[in-house]
Image 1 (cartoon, rainbow, N blue to C red):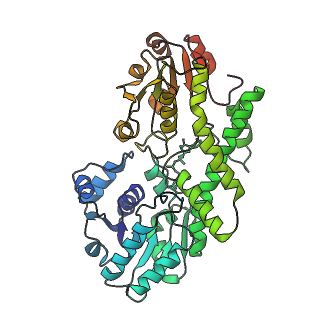
Image 2: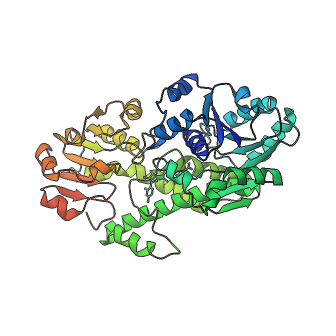
Image 3: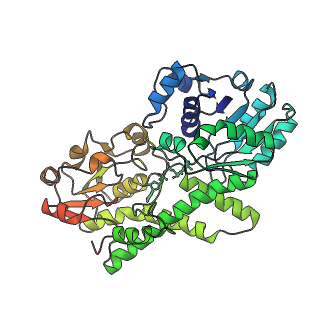
Amino acid sequence: MRITMIGTGYVGLVSGACLADFGHDVTCVDKDARKIELIHGGTMPIWEPGLEGLVKSNETRGRLKFTIDLAEGVADAEAVFIAVGTPARRGDGHADLSFVFAAVKELAKALKGPAVIVTKSTVPVGTGDEIARILAEEGAPEGTSVASNPEFLREGAAIADFKHPDRIVVGAEDERARQVLAEIYRPLFLNKAPLLFVERRTAELTKYAANAFLAMKISFINEIADLCEAVGADVQDVARGIGLDNRIGPKFLHAGPGYGGSCFPKDTLALLKTAEKAGVPQRIVSTVVEVNDARKAAMADRVRDAVGGSLTGKRIGLLGLTFKPNTDDMRDSPSIPLAQALMAGGAVVAAFDPVGREQAEPLLPGVEFAGNAYEAATGADALVIVTEWDEFRALDLGRLAMVMNGTALVDLRNIYDRVTVERAGLSYRGVGRGAG
Ligand code: UGA
């Protein structure tokens, strides 16, 4: 199958490389010449485990090509995936579809024959209809159709998620589009991944509903964590106690500093906009967003309490800055409001992140960047675990106690237990774990 992927961001590059790995003939298109040059040279524009090797091996075998020329890239394609960014529009939270529509206009003129145009970017309900309208208006070849195939990849585990999905959702209105998508995903289908064929609008909404539901699980457990602290219960055990119920499930019940990243914050807001437009308020999702915003803003107070009630003149070490481990992505990371509030309260902040420094530095002026966890802890009154990178799971606590000025370990990801930390001479404050 000849496939073109427009956009070599997270979704486009991972999907393109994985589809090429299935044996398809994939051309990735991006307007950014420097990005394409870098990928050619073996430097990935994003930090994703396994991606570099996958791109290299498929490029070498001639199944994966890169170009900045959209017209050339789509001309003979049987399927064109649109995986360009859909950032939240400044000011109003609507998904900004200008990149999507610009790509559609350009490809409509460049297609030599009918192709299936597939949205992989997360797009609001009805976007497929608008794309179909633009294609017709711009004179795309007769028989060109539009499908929706939302992605469910997690950063840091994107390749595994692509190759072993829980399900593949395809929204299509005609038989040919269904056949083309079935052929593209045949390797996964053989692996028994459920392939769900639904209406296009249903597929578009499914993506938002999935992310909103996961965000809801996180906000739910975060509020339960606060309650645990007030009544002297342990949220880790509560999560396990409810998660073992098959109807609830154990995943996404990890209490922490609030969700971040490029998806949950943006997609929940976009869903609320769609709901507002449709006149069907989504009160639960609206509360999820509020709870998460308030939670991120409240994290600095925990640190302030741990250093005796005032941040003035205190030195705080932060471990981890990215919104989650195994990515260099800083978008909407809880570390940003935390570091800002700590500095606004009069503290000096030193931070270490295993891969996120380059992305983090421009976003966090005033923060000192350390070369490792112990350097970030040196002289600190409190050390805060913000992101649960594996390398923070087995720190030498005795060494931390020696280099720190104070004793407070604030574990916003609950990766340590109180007894071990206290035995090393530090004080412990986790999330939702009893009174402390
Ligand atoms: C999320 C979804 O998990 C993917 O299925 C989806 O495809 C993707 O968005 C998207 O729409 O593109 P991602 O944003 O990469 O993936 O990251 P997650 O692993 O879902 O984590 C999101 C945030 O929730 C992180 O800040 C993480 O720390 C937080 N989280 C997650 C918790 O606080 N607790 C949990 O139990 C799980």
